[in-house]
Image 1 (cartoon, one colour):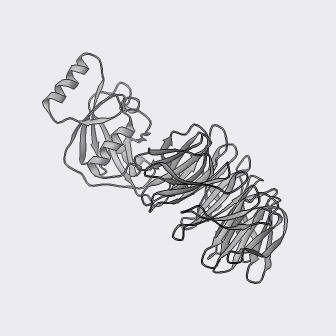
Image 2: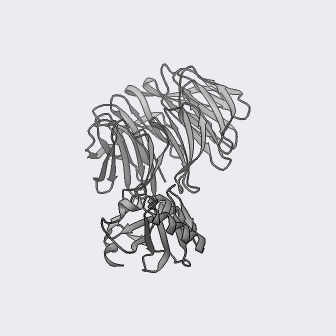
Image 3: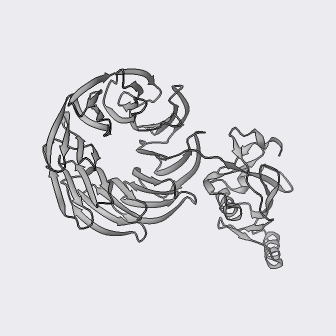
Length: 462
């Protein structure tokens, strides 16, 4: 296949279907052209100067022809991939179209991709990505980007929001996503076709989705919880729960219960089927920023108070522990209920590892020079990665209570961070729109992507 193999990513080939002839149109779609009438129509349009046709041959990695196409020069690469997906069964997110040693961008046109002044048939190679893990990033350009985490490569862009995206939820198996943005719109996405399939009007801070039943519970800026049907795009129920925005949300779908924390300092438990208030936990003196729940043990850990987190018993509605020792507001939590361990981070840069059973602090982890906003923990390895206001990520040994490495490179504070422990990859975003991909094991940055403006708000990992 010539120098097309020089592209720097390991890709596998696909099976070659029967020969198919396709004609493209200026409306960015591809139409099958198998009859003499279609051929005459294209010839007439070309003769009249209405369209520039390019003859294209698509081959797989083995060099076998997959399709021969006659396409308008302004046909999008995305449209070609959509047609090839129908022909070959290869999902859009797994396709790569290569011209020579150049990987073609989905938003470019065939005319832009073609070498200037080239004549004759254009030969493209369709390669197939062997995707192991994906990442969906909501960034500064009011769009969602789907990344191949292993290769640190952007493979799709989802556009439609008019303001920055604040929250996302993903069903990786079904390749579906739900996004909420400052434009007051919820969007349901088909990640394979990069299409928005539903729109709903709601201004939210947090979302939890039951993908099996195609429904979502959203915590609103107005203090309401709203239950949405993703199939009909209708609001099934709306309940006023908090004074001010809902900041955090957990849902037990089988038992139809939801826990929410808000700016009013309360934790509310509601029946999501009928909206009935089941419990109200009061005692926090400020906005709640994080909650973790064990529905089986009926325990909730909440953070938001100055200098401590609270452990609650849902059966009695009582606060049974105050985890003291923090110097600032508790912003983030991670809990392993089986081990009865919790890690909390505050706005002054202090992390505390807790033994919940013994009600004691095991370690105080110091190193961040500003607030700790994000925590990811591998409890089996006893390691954690944290992101903070000092522009850094830190890797911690929880058993020894020590900082192992500091990952530097962000120019401003870390606004979001997630870790895939199996691949030992981390993705972090900052307040200036920069995304960095990290090798946690080698403690090095694999790639940096700079946004135009604004913060990277949220990241989801497969």
